[in-house]
Image 1 (cartoon, rainbow, N blue to C red):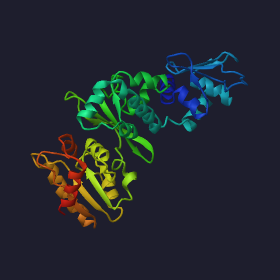
Image 2: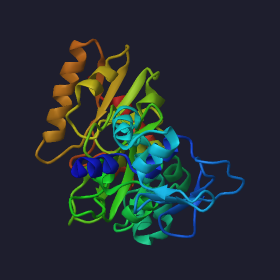
Image 3: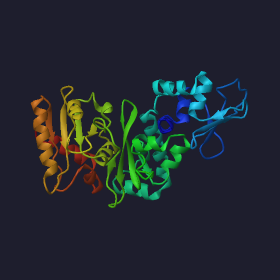
Image 4: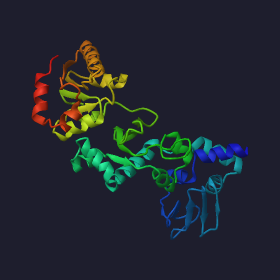
Length: 329
């Protein structure tokens, strides 16, 4: 019984539960303490304190205190066992999208604080501050997200399940540029692009969603499809707003269906690798799209280049437009 109770309290942190009950709080000093009006009695001024790290509450007004189960007992007038049943049936876990939203916002705030991150973006051809802000690009220095999110009351267990912390409880993203992946206005994943060769690029566990920023181009009669996010960024920066990204050469079923949802022309601008893998994937995708009645054009970049390197090495919007116009079926 004791072990089950502890697991239950880990699944439903006290602060998460109180937020679900519309408890309004503000940080109390620093650390993981929050204060607000007491939900257990008529409180004229904030006297109800929650220690998110310890998962405990105490009210200096009515003198009540304890853990999540004790709060449910007092607020719902239930016995200990009835409180267990109530939490199993009614308490909802924290919304993953809300946690990822907070993580994305935190990483975005870090970007300007680390000159090496801004330098890396400039190396990759991304220099427009307004675009960087609009696309919510951030930076993960490491060893800081855990402290930030646990101070907001989120448990280690939740952060590890979402992949934000590793098995040792450390930040999963370290020295990576962070790109939020959104769908329906909600952050559903984060992509970490390593700034050094020492760390692999990676997503969090779970779905990457559909084509990147698809909702912005879904109505366009012509769409440029690229492999990587830096390809997407430099094209957007150069004024090509009908561009989307597949986050790799192999499209998921959902991504393929998105491209086929209405008649359009898809310009495939994949990497021109020395091993030919990018162009082979482009050719295979073009064949599949044509079977579905989708017109395709394959953009022929110079040997060894992708859209990102094309612009980094001096290409401009006019030259890329000429490549689009010359693209064969």
